[in-house]
Length: 399
Image (cartoon, rainbow, N blue to C red; front, side, top):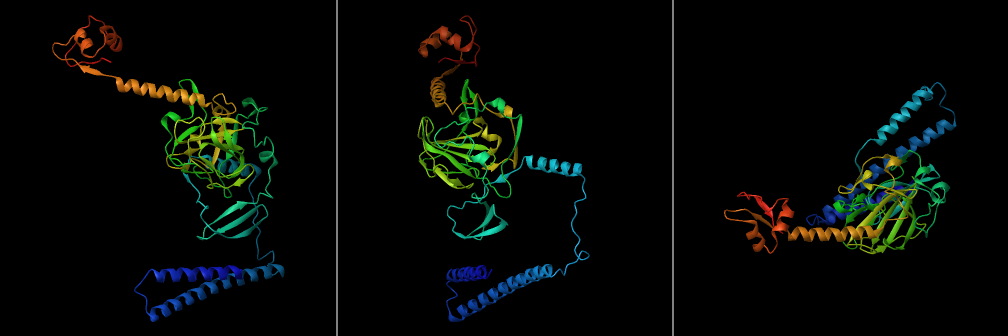
């Protein structure tokens, strides 16, 4: 505790010195002496409060050790609820956590200096203090090991280690805790999903993630805390990172220009894991982002509002009906390229479309000559016959 008081005193001294440096008018010796005296008073007050707190805690501990607190002076808190009431309260609490809400990204720690690490009283959990006076809980991975999540089906080379798991093996619904007091969330990249890069079928072709347009070398973050399973170049995906999380979900980050993490590395939510790019079978710079459960893909927009960069709920009820678009080992980027090619073709056709507003004296033959086409084609484009009477003011597509 003395060490933290000394650190606090040092930080307050630096803060005061910096504030004085920003005010050029207080340059006289008197002003400096007054500032020093105020700092000293402030430090003495803080020290006194901390000492009083320590004394009170020590007195409480001594009283408990000496059994000064009797059964009459301390009334134990007894849970008088019935098992049915406890169960009902638990269900109600879970329903509240499943309700839609706005959960914003945790603060970024990449540029923050770690001052110290404190025990939380639980060996599996500790507290990290940062240089800007912020703090967060972090799980001790040497203690909080989960062989079910991070050992079963664990493969740092194969994209799809779930060959023995089918959609039918997965329960009808699974309760997935996304965030709690010891785990956070951070958007992978903040920006609206490309309308042509949403999850689902498009022209009968599968898209098993979402595409987030970005600029080359834009920062990409870990969405939830977890362990890196894949960090390598993969056909189609280009530079790909796959992170498995405590809740069993895996998140995919594809087409990166650079990967900044390695397999088996633990990353926290909000940690920078890579830079945006256009590697692999890519039609331009974007992040291909997927969410999967035991290899089965589902729509990431069920979890995240990418445009605003927020998580939609604390607990997610993942239904089996949400899974797959016929999930396989990964996205077929031939489908993406085929859609892109067809998009360009349709855009070129739209750009080439020409229309004509009927005026007095216009005939189909006259329009065919004027626009270098035929009467037959004009009729086909507009669903009319060569004998159709042209009304003045009507618009016809001629190309």
